[in-house]
Length: 131
Image (cartoon, rainbow, N blue to C red; front, side, top):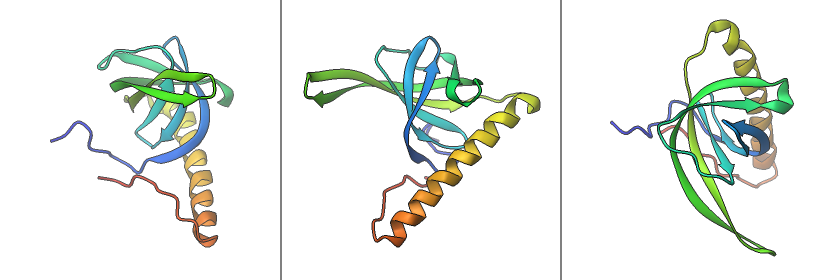
């Protein structure tokens, strides 16, 4: 069985600011069970970390880094090295999980509305469904 098997649909997101351990990053992909985060400094796979959504009331989520790979972004100022990390959310107490589930459901609802609007406009965005 692959460690990569997804438990839920992934949705590409507009950049959502997050902190991953001590690193500032951007959440670029979100599901009910994990996320993809881009950041400028390396982080080791297999490490438990806390991901924080500071602009949403400071939601703190215990996570594990599944993998982290270096990518090169080509820009006007030249190449920029970034890291893309796959994150899985770890179990939380019910009282702590409520705000996260509410946040995720709101984000997913917005993304599904954008997906439907694009479909109606004849533009079919690509989303990674369950594997």
